Structures are given as C-alpha cells and as structure tokens.
Image (cartoon, rainbow, N blue to C red; front, side, top):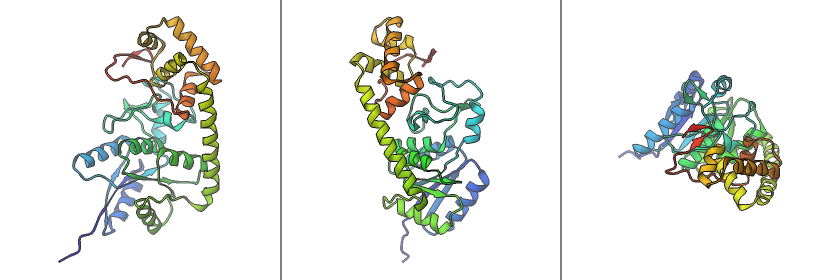
Length: 291
C-alpha cells in the first residue's frame, strides 16, 4: 500500500501571466504541491473563496509585490467611486489600501482606484485582506528588489515572508514549507532595515494614539464616521447634528490631530487603532453618493 502524501495547496498571484504560469508549473512538479495561478487580486479572491467553499483551502499564497501597479497607475487618472481620495504616491497607511471584497467580506475606506469598473487590489492590500478573512492562509511576497519599507508594510499586513523573484526554486520551496511551520522569512540584507521601519511604525502608532486621546467623545464619534467614509451630511444625520456643527467638529478633529485633510486624519486614526462606525443596516451617504 502506498503512503499518502500531505499536499500543500499554493496559489500564485501575479499579473504577469508568463511568470505566474511558469512558476506554477515549476511548483506543480513537486510531489507534495498542488498549485493554481491567478492573474489579479480579484481573481485571487475568487480562487480563495472557491477553495474555501469546496473544502480545499489554500495553504500558501505567493503574491507579487507590484501586483496591479500598472492598473492602479492608470486608474488614478480617472475619478474613483471610493469615498476617500487616494494619494498619488500611495504612501498613506497600508490599512487605507483595502477596498470592499464581496468574496472575502473585507472593506476599508479609501480603497484602491477602479479600473474599468473593477476594484484594483495591490499586493500588500491583498495580503491584509486575506489575513483578515482567511487567517490560516500563509502569504509570501515575491519582489523584484529589496525594499525595507515595503517589506515592513507587508509584515504588518500579515505576510510571513519576503522573497526575491530571482531566488532558486529550492529556496522558494524552503520558504513555503517554513511559513507553514509559522516561520518568518526575510533576506538577511533586509533584516536591519525592516526592524528600523517596524520600530518607527510603533513610534508613530504611539504618537497617533496620544493625538486621538486628545479628542472629546463627540469628536471621536465624528472621527469614526470619517473612517467609515461618511460625508458631512451623512454624519449629521447619523449623529442628529446640523451640518454646520459637524463641519466644526471635523475642523476640530483635523486641528487636534495636526493634519490637513480627511484622508490624513483617517490614516492616523487607523494607525491608532480607531475603527469605523458600524454601518450595518444603515442607508447613508458616502462621499456625497448613496451607499
């Protein structure tokens, strides 16, 4: 009688189809690996949902660090239906990068821009969304070049590793098997830079928490509404205030947080751990449009 082999289910996510299919084919040659490929963030979400529905969840997801970069850059040139505008350089807090995904059920205000009516999902946002919705899936980011800041963001989002795209197949397999043992894998050359970035992020979080604590209870309510992406009129209706009073509260929030835009206030709130107000069952306005 043959010995059953515990197979590892791997999902390769890269919008360069030749690379994705080539890597998938190389991994599939391993006797203990089942592999699928997805060419975009939304396609990856569909694969993950389908696998979960069929009782065949993926174990590891390999994600291109630059996933969707071309589509995101093109979509920024056109108005997006998101409630909060997206900064041109994408430099705000990583928690602001997530959009709504009906397949995995996660949402964030200020999601990525839309391309052709479809929400674009970048690599780090995909890591964060999957970590939230399917925490048993280990994610590894595949990168063209070492970048301590982005590697730190990936780890904060829930990634278990950051690996160069030009590494050997044996190295990649070692990482895949390692993250399933709850190991974290980083290139040695990145370690010092990533630790520095994580230390700075912790310091920024502490400062953000101090600033949020300076708000009054009402101002915190308004801030949570801002995090949820509500416009001034919707906040007024929700809190039974006049739009003029809400505007005053919003101005006070920006002043106390020492920021100059709603987007910056939302990013700071996220760093401080402030979540959105619960919109379940509400019919409200988001950025002036019906939700």
